[in-house]
Length: 553
Image (cartoon, rainbow, N blue to C red; front, side, top):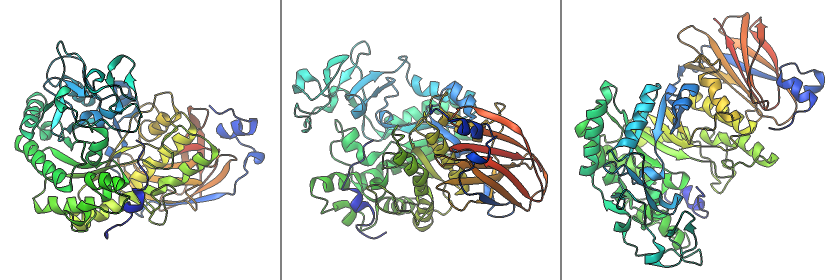
């Protein structure tokens, strides 16, 4: 990418980290819609069992902070312990600071045993079939506790004066803003709520984890993330890192942190850069902060430290030159047009239907302040091929498209899972797990546990195309253990059912399919078996529905 590429305009704005059914719609949801409900033009989905074949990595169906019940119900293979609060996790005191998320307070975690919180997370993950991912702090400070494991604030009202807002449960803990609610308190003492940290101190934690759980090659912790969203530490952790990190700072922290991990466990995989989103792909933390304060006219790191290269490509180039410190290239992505909210207005629902294109489509311009094509997965793969080691796994370790309690959020999540598999993403962990009663949770089950017995979508992606994926998308795969074809059809339209024909090439020409469907009724329905012949399966998809067809070989 050239200097002042897509990220410049994006800096002009900041990152802000059951419907009642009509009778016709109810018939459609039950799979028995009459002619009056079929208001949309028919759609043919072309499927070829021999085209575009590639493995689907099951690690794309990962979650963040999954509980025992979550991991079991979702048959989740990956569980991430990440987020802002992990940037300052003090494993020896088993404490975290809640940073800008909640009044910059250092809190005790359950139990005073060193590493207890992380060990419980690892135990839960492993016991329920998920590989754990742990975050290694790099910022240089970790939380400390007061006498008797008491809470400590970074911005004490008694010490720093009146503030915009205080914790209602501890009125001495302020938000670090002066009473005008605009001006940040500066010059605070990090020692108020933190102790200094170092790679050597974190290496002791790695030793502890290996001693308790074994090395990654022997079933221990397999993935270590190099902190969390480092380029915006100046915002999320301004109590200890008020100046955005320079490109060189994070580059070097990862190199040293990786070396410390691999010295203890050479089989463990290091994951970085864990950047928050679009601006963080192109600009260091120092540049993001500097540009905001200087009318977006200058980007010092981009010009000087990075030699005109964009941030992640520069990091990859530097890391490659230093050896091979990073094993998985990871980023976060949240849509920036309000899709990750609970807004279910018609306009936002339709935007969700379109905006998943940001994950793959180079011809789709983000309908947000980004105002540029994102095509996230192909972009990352291209950067890796050009600047790092081709074939290095790509991960999206945080994402969320919102509306979890609405069928629109469910169809969007189903679309995302399909895109991840179709585009050959290697790993993903959703932020975080929707409530088990929500349609979005059930949409995740449609891929990983659609029958309640652990049955899954296929593990070999094959070609499946629909004419307009903004209205109806489809994904197909073969299941290696039994040769079954699985086809996920996601009807995104907000009203009216859609007649659909699955045109099946290079597969059994006739048979009987099992059919599972999720609609706004918020139940995964098992519908009557559906016969197909002549290489064509015909059905009618209700509005806002997810239908899985299981076609035996």
